[in-house]
Image (cartoon, rainbow over all chains, first blue to last red):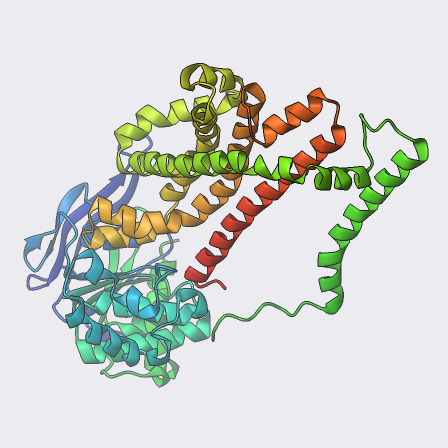
Length: 266
Length: 261
């Protein structure tokens, strides 16, 4: 895989499902203001899995939170499916760095937590929750509480919770960065396999180049503060992928290219 | 993959943990007994521990009939303080207005030596149990409010974001997430609060009362029956320990609920 065969595309796609247009975010406007994001134009197509890759503090999580409707841009706007994003929507699944499970609830009840918040029909979602948990290999752990689960297992529960409503968009904010390297690889594979079955639109924030390349259809590289998008790279590998991919020279060439882009910032 | 069990305690650590405090206690009692016997110390000032035990048996009916008036008012005050304190903490978490208005006043009040207010309660609520109950509530409510407000505020910010992203209402977040997360704070505040409630009732009984363990201490004091005074204090300890162990049990149940046991 030569450098030229990685197709460059304009970051702004007119047909994209998620769409950020001229987004700027300033914290504490005034003399001590922090410009977190500047001139962000990007899109995620329907069914596409995109990673936002960048150094710590580049504002990638802020961008994700704006897409989730939990933060508001200072300038510009975010649309999802053509609708401007002004407040959180039910059809978006969210994952954080921490599993954010309720310690007094079992795995199954944690997955069903959104049902309780949104007063939906529990009977309808119970089999869905059980199915999701068994897909990620937790069928033996339905009635265990988070304290009895390992870090990787807790994040699996969190994925299932995010997928319960069959969301049209899954937003993930460094979901595996608190895990050890081996568990992290395992979780990448779990997510990859789920993606194969569900074909969602996904936006994944990470500072791991390898993780971004392995999981994504496309990687957006962000610069350090103020965050702007400095690279838009299509990952050419066929799906389904498995972990033997990361040993191939092509894979490592792409990683090296992205590494160069990030390092050029310093 | 599941959490590891606690490392096994060796037999020696077990012996040390359970016997060392008992040993020290017995040693102090022994020295006390020996010292008062050897010096023939005036028993109206410092009676021998054995004399205290004798006083317990001699005054068994007198002491035991005075337990209930003290214990029931303390427990009632504690429960009222817990309920009102909890309500205020929830209110201040739910409404920033309520918090801005109330919280500085509550913290300010907390600094005042609350014991000093005890005679006022007698003036306001009379010489019966109501004044003692009122004072017990007053003195034991502060730990509940302050600790619970902190607990309700300290919820994991990511979890609050999750609730927000699920379009949870403020009340749902408060009762389904913030409140259960703050329960450990409530339990540890209760441990402080029950002790304060006991203090409140005793002080109330010191000021004006015709029954209760605090009253009995004053009676024994008036008659220089120091052995009975110490015996009564001992029973106050038992009552306090009993309440404390109830809360410790609740704490244990909570740990089980949180999956930590």
